[in-house]
Image (cartoon, rainbow, N blue to C red; front, side):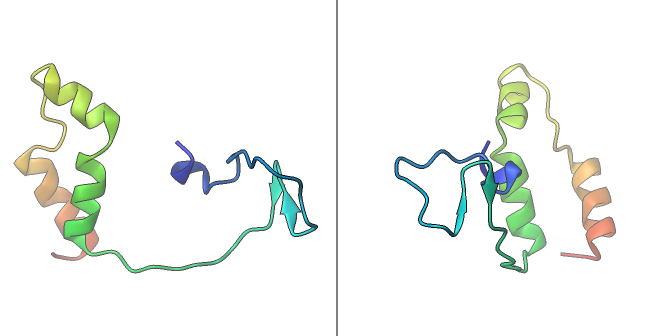
Amino acid sequence: MYAYECYKTLPFPFESVGVGCEGQPLELDMPREMSFERLLKLLSSASAVNTAKEQGVNLLSEELVKELENAWGGA
């Protein structure tokens, strides 16, 4: 998934104009704060979580969500 690779492997259908290139892109520092609720939405949208759910396995159990919330520092 491109997002998890920080979009470094995203293929572009055009030639480089000198501001980085495919395989060696410039890194942009774009910090973003994320709420715990948003983190849960991101995790619950992961294909592994959905595949497990389809097979009857809940990877984001209430217990795990509570542990994550405590580690996050609260909701």
